[in-house]
Length: 203
Image 1: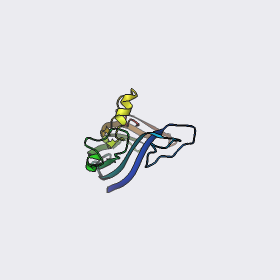
Image 2 (image 1 turned 30 degrees about the vertical axis):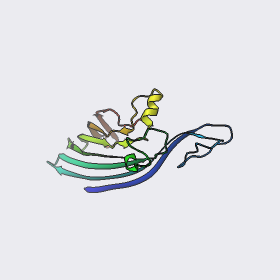
Image 3 (image 1 turned 120 degrees about the vertical axis):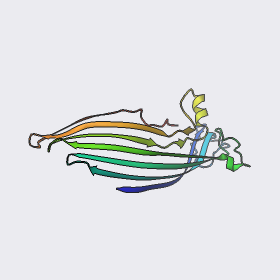
Image 4 (image 1 turned 135 degrees about the vertical axis):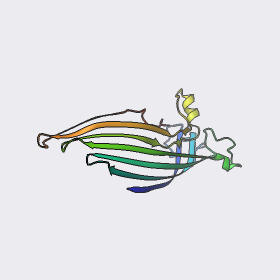
């Protein structure tokens, strides 16, 4: 088995806070309302994001004997990310970013990893099978909104970055599956590693 995966996404993200003067709430999407007397914008983070991700994957299995099956799977991921930060935002800007130098407002990064997986299954009897596997998992990196790290640090929150690194995890699993009492009872069991969870710190 083999396959190809491709994803192209474009999105605009904005985050804002405003001063509530008890005169109604003004919706802010693409344009901050700094001069609005009823609900003036206090902070405004905004950026346009364009992400392109693709992957190649495949799997092969081979019966080494009539009882032992070996299989190998592999996947290669490539993720290209582009973030154009708005010049009029109140958060920190990339170095050199200004209305006169829009190219300096663009962040670019690329993430990739090959992820192999090896598996084995052994048929002890018609009712009992043993299995085991080892593999690598991947989560792509990403851009948080520019200035999030500074805002978090000012609030005393550590571990937040404007750029999130890609993550990798190795896993191992082994166990058995059995059908007992004339297949009236199915009894499985196994163990697996528990790597550090793959997660992003929410902005």
